[in-house]
Image (cartoon, rainbow, N blue to C red; front, top):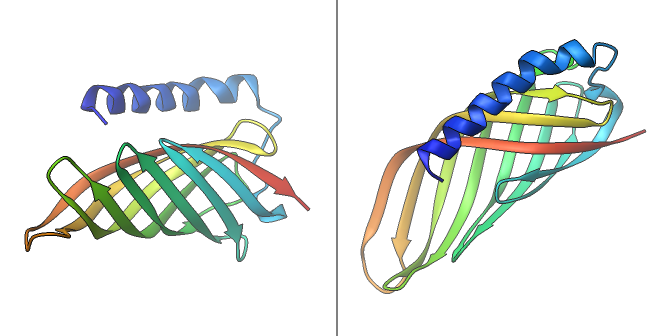
Length: 162
C-alpha cells in the first residue's frame, strides 16, 4: 500500500468523522447490544465476537497477490455507548508468501489504537494504526527477515443486533 493512498485514506476518515456528526446527530453505536459483527477491510474480511461491552475478539484474514495474512485481534473499547468509540488492541498473525524467487511463512504481532464511528445503528467505519513486528522465513533457504513496520487498517463493519 503506497504512502499516498494511506494519506488519502486518513484524510477521508478525518473529514468523515468531522462532517458526518452534523448530518446524523440522532444515531449512535450500540456495541454493547450486539454479540456478532462482520467487517470488510483492505484487502480482506473479519468476523468479530463481543465477550463483553468493552472486549471483543476478531478473526481476520487478508489476501493480496501471493500473500495471505490470517490472525486474531483483541479489542478494548473505552466508551462503548458513544457514536465515536476509541479502542486499543493487540493482533497476532500467521503469514504465508510466494514470490518469483522465494516462498515461506512467518508471523506478525501488532499493538494498535484507533476508533470506530457509527454512521447508522448497525454500520460503522473503523480506522486503527500501530507498530507491527514482522518475521518472515524462506522455505527453501535459511534466509529470514525481521523488522518493525507501521500498519494502518481501515474497515467497514456491520453488527447483528439481538
